[in-house]
Image 1 (spheres, helix red, strand yellow):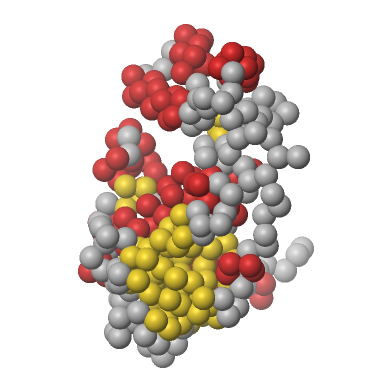
Image 2 (spheres, each protein chain N blue to C red):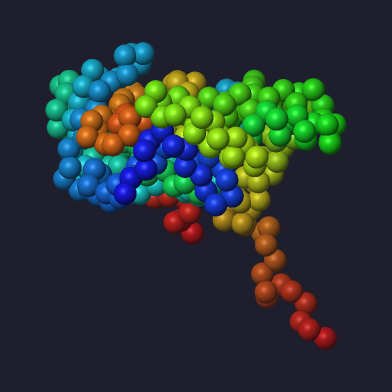
Length: 234
Length: 95
């Protein structure tokens, strides 16, 4: 039976788990299998992105070593005329398929302060740790009015004894997307020479997914180029 | 000649990124593709890059040097320069 969303889930060591779907996750083929259409909506902040386009998937190349970036080959079938027929690689950052084991741990302020007392650190290191603790607090679920606040507090106190949490899957996936997108922006003048041409950043919407954070998927679209990977060349 | 071209292009890509303020933890061959035809090399997969400006000054130079060495080590292993490896026939016979 699915747990109520307001109750914090923890692992066996007491670390707070990010929100997880209660139903089994469908295989990635369901969304990224050959022949599936993907409808992408361009990010308004990105002038290089088309407002909307659809691509037909030709092959799912799976995720990279970071377990987040999924590469999907496809062809644009609908959208602005200049995009139609282009062979593209969609870099998909889908939080639903981020393995729990990949998520970084976040540490609460209390433990950071204790560590600082035990092991004196430089100012810059202490500041970095404080930043982490702030983001850790951000991942506490908002109080649910339907749940007795005392129960919620007991749970929070219990896990705070060990006091650590995982970064949410959506935030983790978004971090990778942001880094990739920012890199392509910075290297705009090199697109098509030493890096692929980027066709903009987009979002995919899966409205029927259980959790809000899994419904929006960030995508970066690049022009496909044919060649041999250097690790396959001898 | 081909090996020298590959090495030069890969090292050039790393330098370009560094000049643009991007530290790229280069993982190796999987991030580079040689295009059919002109033999041009393109790089991809930048989701683990860091912005040099936002890095702690104390570690910046150290990290840059480490990444440069890492890439060079990989190139020396995957695409060694001719003559840089002693072949078995050149080794002294066991006494």
